[in-house]
Image 1 (cartoon, rainbow, N blue to C red):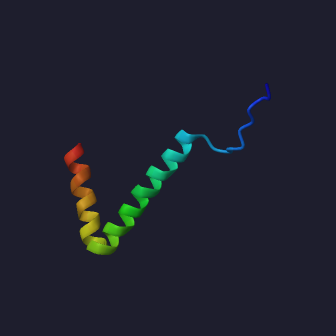
Image 2: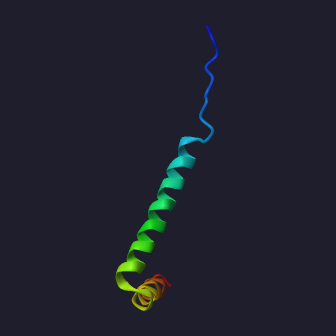
Image 3: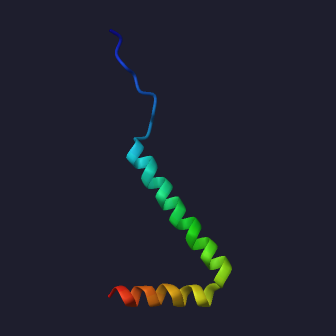
Length: 52
């Protein structure tokens, strides 16, 4: 029985993590473009304060 050789360079969990990080970056840039810098940073600041 021949050995199974994987040609994939990256594991599936790493690809999923990269995809999620890409979505977060894309969402951040989209919100920044939609609301503008000042409003975006105020939203982030308010969210940060609400967490802590």
